[in-house]
Image 1 (cartoon, rainbow, N blue to C red):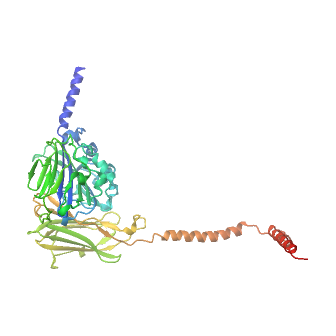
Image 2: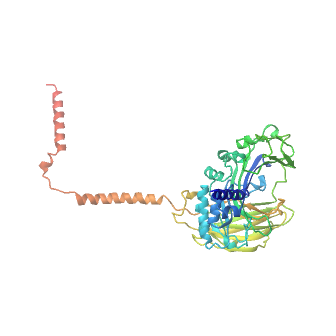
Image 3: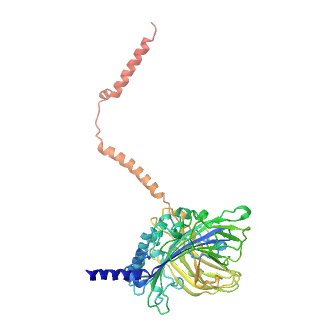
Amino acid sequence: MHRLDLCVCLFVIICGIGSATDVAEESLTLKVTNQAQLYTVFNFSVITSYAGAAEGYHYHLFPRNIGNLVKKYSVAEFHLSMTQGLWRYENWGYPDFSAPPGAQLWVWFQHGVKDVDAAWRGFANALSGLLCASLNFIGKTETVIPELSFQPEGYLSGENRHYIRYAVLPRENLCTENLTPWLKLLPCGSNNGISRLIDPANLHHSRFLSLGLDFKYTCTEEICTRKRMELSQSVSTVFDLQLGPKNKPDFSIEEVLGRRLKGTCPLASKSLVKFVVPDNVILQPLPTYSDGNLRVYDLVSMKKTGNIKAKWSNAAVSSSDDIPHLLAHCHITGIGQQDGGIRCQIANTASGNVSSTIMQTVPWFLQVYLHTLSVTDQSGKKMEIGDLTFRPAKIRQSPHFIEYRLVVPEKSTVVITMQFTRGFLTWTEHPPDANHGFYIGSTVISVDGQEIGLGREGTQRIYTEIMQVIIPVPDFSMPYNVICLACTVIAIGFGSLHNLTTRIFKKVDPDEADQSLLSRLKGRLSAIKTRIVGQGTPP
């Protein structure tokens, strides 16, 4: 009996040691943009030991449902974003977490997966059910295999492009039903700490809202002998600030987010609130420490937390430091419903050349012509592109895929154009709002962060607008008209034929015909009339 108790105690101790490797951190960053708007970023991360969690089937702070999905489908890393609205680079600068409008998912699978497409479909469907999203609509016609873009961000033994899949759903909307299961993945849920400030109803009143979920393996040593699992969750929003007296955009956390800070998450080892504000901004209470425009509140060391207010000592002044050096915009060209094109404009205001990788996917029902691809500078001179990859679409099987490298010269503008022809869809392939049109996903431009003045290493992705295209739509009222006409013709023709074939015709004597009910009724009425007229006549 004592030996059994000793084994149980040892097992509990071992499990406790394994769970102690879990580290949870949370932070909230608030940054005032040049347009009197507030950019807020909620970031939550959980780092755990791979050996203690995935292999031992024991989870402490790391969400078990994510761990089961990663293990079942042999996922090396995945990145999911669901965004409502368009990020305005000219007004807000570069975001901390870049994401296109709609839903975006890209996954690296472990080497050795036999059927990557089956694992991709299964993982997308499982993630769709987990987050109450429409990721189950990701199929062959939305999936591509990038050749240059979307490099692995975590540890991956060897880079084989056969094991990466990418898809985007431009029309996917972000709802509160997506945020609720997302919050349940946090160690403290939405009950304590910074996550308590996330009010789903309040977030949907913002100009921009993006939800992120990223998983990857990391290593702390050069020769990776023990991998760790890292899950990062983020919420990015942009709120409008109300200008007070003398155009001062004073605000507080409670005014913007609708809730107050109350304590920290007891499971988080680090809980920070960061303000990126100009020097003429006074914060109350005073921050824990400051570093230039960065003011930091360490909630773990603070005895009391509550509302944090930001007040301007003088009128807010716009700064040109946050204006991005590289901007990109795309739109549809052409008139009518037959021919069209895509025109993208990339502007580089930096004092040096910027090397970029451009990727574009086009739906299969738009017939893209590669020979019409043109890349010119602002003077109209053609420019060279490198490492061009073009995969033409297969009808109802795969989209068009175009990817290449391009060097954008300093202080110049590059124009990229490409022509296409609209195809036809069967009437069952149109959505319920067919006249609304279809969407082409954002063009993805990948650049080095240091080349565009971000001051940090790593790849920065720039997403353009999604493009709406109208394709020929059939007359959906025609089936109704045909049904009405056919029913009318059948009713008239079949009714007459039915009467002729089912009625019995008999020869009737004319004298007997006058003895019908109607004739007798007429006779009585005539007699009554005669009697009345006769009584009224004077003798």
